[in-house]
Length: 123
Image 1 (cartoon, rainbow, N blue to C red):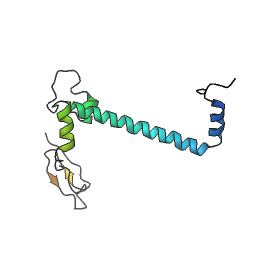
Image 2 (tube, helix red, strand yellow):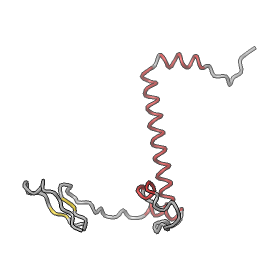
Image 3 (cartoon, helix red, strand yellow):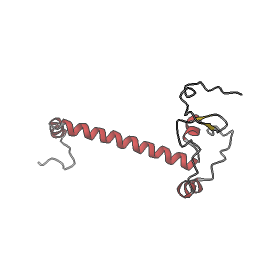
Image 4 (cartoon, helix red, strand yellow):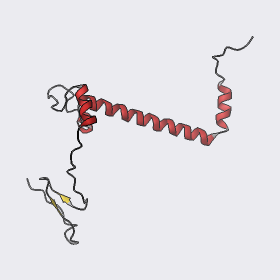
């Protein structure tokens, strides 16, 4: 009597994989990368759908219903805004050696003696 076609021969697969350790390692690494990228993609799809930033989602800012999310315009509009809106101009300094204070102004740290000076934040 012939074995059923759906029966998988584990001993053959294990014997083949034991003779190919590098291929097995690359295969497991590829699965790990695919799992990570898929998880990250699903997380970002969720926060786009909810109109949140990563920081808002992780901190649970709008989770308990006490505060409405002003950026949430509904699933469809959130996706259309994400896909088609113009990317705003960055507020980061063009030269990262500049020092940024809390008011958004930058001062150059080009002089050697003032670059190591501590920044004092006044309230």
